[in-house]
Image (cartoon, rainbow, N blue to C red; front, side, top):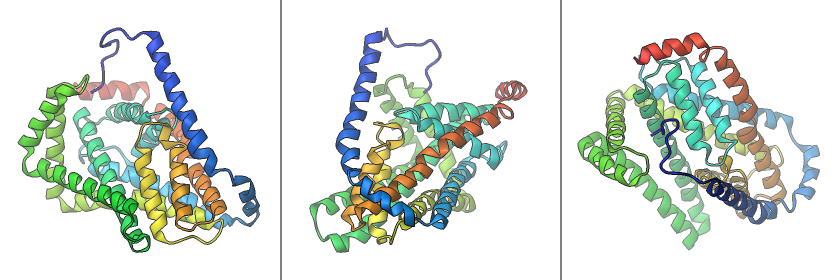
Length: 353
């Protein structure tokens, strides 16, 4: 729940703020020192590969990344109610603005969600519909990421044998999928029970009111039931969620292929899924540093030459992580002159009344 402006649960001394910031900087420094730099130790020798890079593959990788962004906005549109739903172009700019912000601040998911909420409500959507759509979109995207990760584990198991590491990651992936399925079934079949759990659980979450938690979960159950009843909408939502991850993973493969022969799917999918899960940890903006270290380690472990892995992953991150930042600035500026113009703000305020 958003905290009203000016509301603070007790005094927050300036020293505590600086301590938190200093701790975050220390964590980032440790990540760079012990995770990123060892992976880039051979990057200098990898520069020789740049002379043989294929421009066609680089262009194809960028196109796939842009397609992944478009698929995410199509997923947004699929889970929103049809009445009063903004155009795909507006949703693409809103999603880009939020994505760019999340890549600039550590743990930027909460901040970017706040921006996204404001932009969508100003565009005319009801606050309850925005919150529900965000929950559905997050759940669908996370479920499909778990599927990609599980596929990588399943492909890697025959070559990896019965090693404890593979068994652990496979168990974690299956557990995530089972828990997600249980939550969805519970929301559809026993919504009153799940709403009761949400109301009781809200008591242990700071700044979350039980009534708000119950209302959001209840609305989510309604939307899930509606999606289940409308098979066409459900297929579109699952299809766009799958396309979002698969296009991104395909872009990674293409960027790796630009610097030399690419290895099999098992290392790619396992590394990609694991890196996606690592990126969910609010340590650095968008998993900066941790994603690169994780992905390079897995790819090298599955036979990709170190130089190819370093250059391929860094090039992919240039398109996947850094390219959305300037695009987000342009998208937000275009919204400022359109959706966010003063007249639109007044109209949205009247609609909410």
